[in-house]
Image (cartoon, rainbow, N blue to C red; front, top):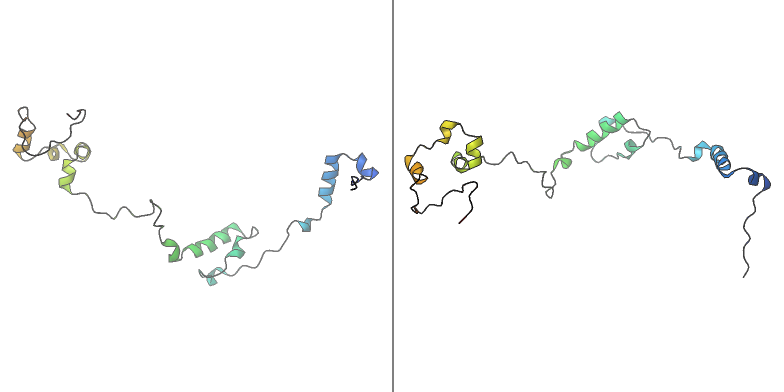
Amino acid sequence: MGRKKPREMPAEEKKEPFLARWSRLKREQPAAKQDESPAAPVPPLDSLTPESDFAAFMNPKVKEELRRLALKKLFSDPHFNIPDPFEPYSGDWTVGEPIPKELLATLYQAQSVLFTEQEKKPDAEPQASVDGPGAEKDTGKAKPDEPGRQDT
């Protein structure tokens, strides 16, 4: 098997440094070779529908304002307003039922933040006597959690 000889450079290429040669050849390349395709004509915005071809608006030679208007027209279709069912934050969580006042009254955080001093005081006296100093009796009701106290 024969071994191929490396290509010999012409004498003028040997004298010219590599980077200078590379730069010269780069400048000599025709500018038309760098993808100088003309921009495709874009259809008028009034005639666009969701089924239209929007590829012409994605050309880099199309003005940014025109591209945005075309995309706005595309995404105004109700098809794109359907939330993703698998995205946890895409739902509207403001339409739920409010927490009833009775339940809020049992939450300690709500008592300290949401209610005024008058609303914090219970109207019924038996509740105050259960939590009083001699309230060791088991009344059948579970005692509410007390912050800073461990379960026994």
